[in-house]
Image (cartoon, rainbow, N blue to C red):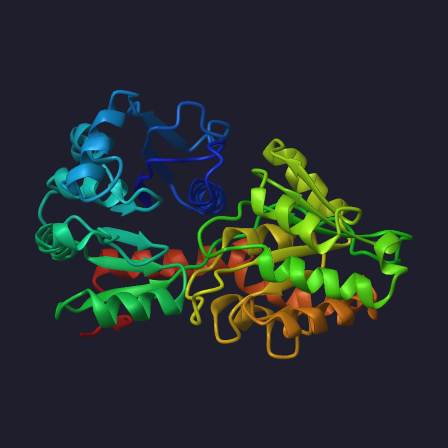
Length: 400
């Protein structure tokens, strides 16, 4: 199978979707004939693969003016619009030599690039969605542009011959709310985990480190966590010395303010930004890893790439996640270290469970969680689906 992949961002760009796309391409490269990739990333980590050719269309700084215009008038469907227009000619030329075109990655300019390429008739094209699209303008003043943007979206979807989603829930939202009456084959293709696993923790250290890596923003807030942490350490004074909460990522003013407010600055630390490889090593050195999801969402339809990173760090995960969401489903109903991010009492209970457990108690559950994201499983499912799209064999069909 010869593939052409439109992916505006690839690793080492420190963007979750770029890393997920790169990992998937590394996983499928050994079992396909050739992969051509059109991207804006100038020094991709795919360069060591013999059967992968990377074509770079630069993402010029001048595009910031276009992006500002888009934000002001909500004119263009997505960031990267002008990159999509410039990359389309290259995609059109390369598409004539492949069996299938696959567009994935944020921004969604990857799909617009293929759309603008005006593919040859009957050329298979599969588009991947990690979350629903398009992202509507917030201002009601620009309500007319919603219809304009939706028209782009609808027209694009009339051209694809297959669709993949990162989760079943994202697919359900897209099919129910946005995708009209066209039926099209689809499959759920999750993120893929790569790399050797570090040894599982086999003892409890004198200091138990709870590590969060990433960014707090919007409704993904640390306030309930810190309130629960204060209750947790104050309940047993010795815990202040034994349990340490560390945040690695852009420094949060809210963490600083609330840590001081709750009197827990002695056991809560921010280390700021570190290189990606350093963050991964810190995950492997931690006792527990902390995942915090949106407090305002009761559904949790997304699959955070951080969850895959954490699973492959082979450390127990303390997950603040909606009980009916994707993360909760992956971890399983019997997993004890999870709580709704809006429920402080639940968070305290999970912290108490952590304090009364050994890290090794969760090794078997984590091993089971990883199975659905192992490279062999994800690659087999993806290639079976892509082969079916190429040969027009029946598969799951997206219904109105």
